[in-house]
Image 1 (tube, rainbow, N blue to C red):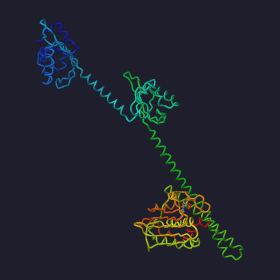
Image 2 (spheres, protein in one colour):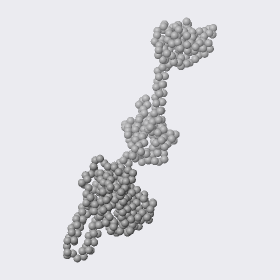
Image 3 (tube, helix red, strand yellow):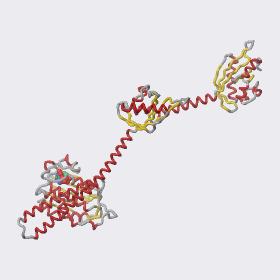
Image 4 (cartoon, rainbow, N blue to C red):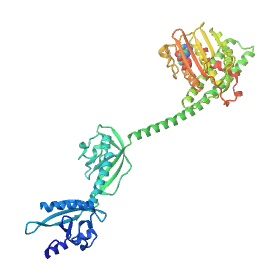
Length: 525
Ligand code: ADP
C-alpha cells in the first residue's frame, strides 16, 4: 500500500489531472477522483486492486512490463498509450514518476495522465480533412488559383499549370493579373475587392485569359471564399474550367447552322430563279413554234431560208440556256441534299434503244461513226428514266463535242457481274492522265484553250456522277490521250419492290426535245 502524507494526499485528490500510483508493476496504489471518473469506477474499486480490473489481458501485460522496467531502472518516463478501458479505446499520455523511499528504493510509481482521446480524434479529423483537400486540390480536373486580399497567388494546382502554362514556383507571390489580358486588370481588381468585402460572389463568369505563351484562352470561373475562425475572408480560391475548345466548337456549330440556313436560302433562291428563268424561255419557245408554223404555211415570206436559220439559232440557244439552268439548279439541289430521284423498275435495254433511235440520225448528220452494241433482250432495273436519259445524252454529247468528223462513237450495254454496264467510247481527243481524276469535279473544263471551240459549263460530268451514285452505281473513265475516251457507267442489276414513280409520269415523247436540249452545245459549233 502506497503511503502518502496527508498534505500530499489532499493535493493528489484535488488534482485536475488524472493521478494514480502503482504499488507494484500490476497493482494500483492510491487513485484520485479524476482517475476513478476516467475509468467509470469508484476510488475504492480501483485502489490496491490489480490493473486487470480495468484492462484486458493484453494491455495488463503491456503495462506490467513497462512499470517493471521503471521499478528496476528508477527512470521517469513519458508515454502515449492506447488502452481499452471498459471496452472503450482511450488515448492517454502518462508521465510515470518513480518514488524513492529513505532506503533509496523505488516504493511506488506516481502517474499523472492526460486523456488525449478527443485531441487525437480532432487531430485525425484535421489530418484527414487536410489530406482530402490536398488530393482534391492536386488532382482536380479544374484549375484552382488561391490568392490573398492583395491578389497575390498563394497556391495553385496541377491543372492550373496545364491550362495557364506556368509552373507553381513561377506564380507564387505573383499577382493574379498574370492570367489576365491587360485591358481587364482594373475589372479584376474591382472584382477581387468585392469578393474580399464579402458583398458579392461571381460564379459561372466566362472570362478571357492569357497563358504563359501569350495565347488567348477562355475560362469559366467560380469562386470559393475561405474565412478564418473570426469569419474574416482570408483567401479566395478561384476555380477555372478551360472552355476555349467548347466555345470554338459552339462557334463552329453556329457557323454551320448559319451555313445551313444560307444554303436553304440558296435553294429557295434557285427554286425561284428557276421559275423566273424558265417562264420567259417557255414563252420564247412557244413564240418560236408559232413563228415556225407561220413560216412553213406561208408562201409570201421572202428569204425563208434566212429566217429559218435565225429561228434555228434562237431555238438552239434557248435550249442551251434551258439546259444550263436545269443543270445549275440540279447541281445546287444535290449540294444541299434537295435532289431526289424518281425511281421505278424499268427495262434499261428498251430505254437505251429509244435513245439510240433518237440520236443516231443526229450523229450521222454530225458525221460520227456511231455503233450500238447490246446482247441483252431486256434488263429491268430500278432507275429514274428521266435522269438516266440525261446521263447518257450528256456522255454522248461530250463524245461528239470532243471528237471530229469520222471518229467513232460506240455505246455498249451489257451485264457485268451483278451490274448493268453502259459505256460511251469515242475515238476523239481523249483526256490527259492528270486530268482524268478532276473532270468529275464541278466547273472543270480540262482544256481551257479549246473553250471557244467547245462550249459548256463544266458541270455536266459532275451531275452525271452524282446521278449515277444516287442510283447506287459508279462511273469510271478510261482514256488514252490523243486516242480515245471511254466513260463506263455501272448500275446495280436490282429492282425495287415499291414503285416510287408512276410509270405513266414518264413520257418517252419528250425524248426528242431532250436530245435537242442536251445537244444544244454541239449545235452551236
Ligand atoms: P461541259 O459542260 O464543259 O462539257 P463536262 O462536265 O461534261 O462539262 O465535262 C468536263 C470536261 O471534261 C470537258 O470540258 C472536257 O474537257 C472533258 N471531257 C468530257 N468528256 C470528254 C470526252 N468524251 N473526251 C474528251 N474530253 C472530255
